[in-house]
Image (tube, rainbow, N blue to C red; front, side, top):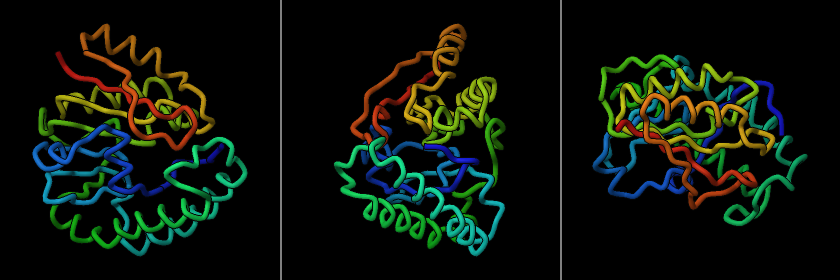
Length: 221
């Protein structure tokens, strides 16, 4: 599967929790930062903030962007159905429905979230937060997935920045758009361990891309 640029593409709360091994207690009690998630929602009264350059745009403009990219993504999926695990999501039509529903849920919350400071216009590798603002920083379907778009140094800088503002970082998945192990993973892990970080590759309960069921978990010792 190949995409020319990074695109907004929503996922459900259930998927999000499974890919990061999150519990409901995590959602409610921990201060969480989502980096480049596009579709983060104020789940059940938890303290969740999402950053994305997308938040510079209006609700209408984001809707237009989703309308533009959705057919492109779906055509890529249809051309590579053998690259995915059709278990919890039974078929391509169900996938499209789930993704659009998640993005519509996001858009319904978007303007309130902007006013409340839950959606913050920003982009890795620079975050507009003080040190240790969060307990946990999450990045799904950005780092490692877009290895052809984001180079090794970007990954190192982005993770260092997430570790500055959060005690723990989790990144999912660790494969590229082509379902191959990211070429950046090994050098990034080596660099983090040389800096004294605790780094673990953890299997999760979520797999849609074949082989994409692993999460990188990093914490400051």
